Each structure stands twice: as C-alpha cells, then as structure tokens.
Length: 103
Picture 1 (tube, one colour):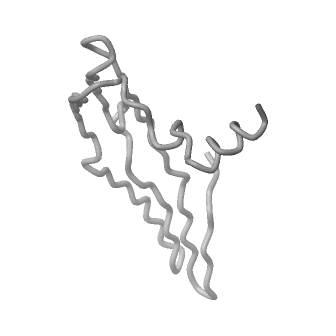
Picture 2: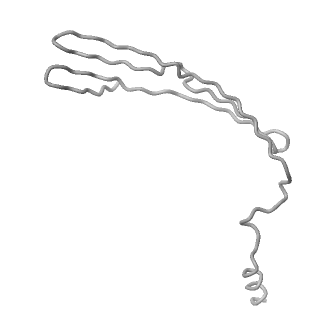
Picture 3: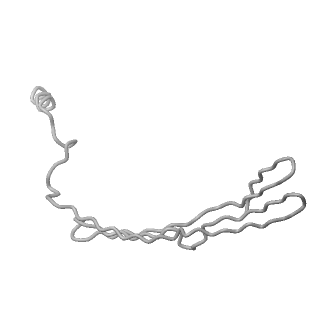
C-alpha cells in the first residue's frame, strides 16, 4: 500500500491509502416501462483508516473501521405513452417553411 506522510520537527504521521468497491444491478421490466435497481456500497466491508504515528520514539499504530456498507433498492415506473415525440424531434414553423421553399 502507498503511504502519505505528514511530518513536523518532532513527530511523523503516516496515513495508508483508502478505498472501497461498490456494485449495482439494473433490470428493465414491463416492456421497458419500468426498471428495478439494486446496489451495495462497500461490498468487501473494508472502508476505514490505518495510520502510524511516531512521537518521541513512541510508535502508535492506529486502525479504525467505518460503518459504510449500505444496500439500496429502487423501482421506477414510467407512466404515459412512449409514442409521444420529444421536443427535439418536433419541427418548428421555420423548418416547415424552409422545406416548402426547397420543393
């Protein structure tokens, strides 16, 4: 692991690198009108800190763990028709006029 050291004239503090791994799944349902999502944060349950503090030839190894594991479930359902054109697909009157002149 990589360490990051903070020093002063009479002490040193070395902090180890930290990290976590998250995972999520998504499944579409009901002809793509709904989806369900499931996620887990910190799947290995290893979020925490570890450091070494040295002062006046006294070594302290500091280890701590956080309660970072979380689970989540999310369900979304889209009401209405999928046939309705979005605003960017609509032609404005200027485009209609431009098409008429080209013909």
